[in-house]
Image 1 (cartoon, rainbow, N blue to C red):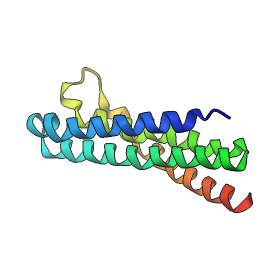
Image 2: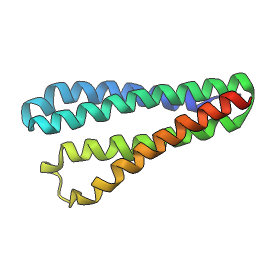
Image 3: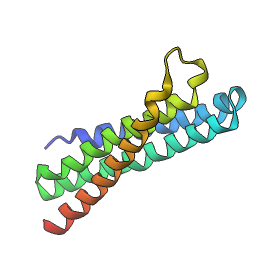
Image 4: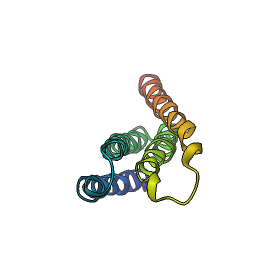
Length: 127
């Protein structure tokens, strides 16, 4: 079985490293300290959950059961909501749209992370 989740998790992790480096150099020099903190948090959580996507993909391959991929989908969506909104909030001073909508999106991403971890735990015990 070709595992696209390992591919996307690895690609997302590489992106987290690149964004983390950008945060350490560009964001730190051009934005307020709060923006730096938001950017670091976003890249850290992106990295954690890219590894989680890879783990879920490996478990799906080993167990030959696609139900392990649902946690990976939750982690990926959580990255988009949680980390994505934090990245945008970190650079909100240069964005040309109202970023107030991003505030509620961040915790939705956090809930998706939690749901992914809980579902992964349940799947690991059941199989």
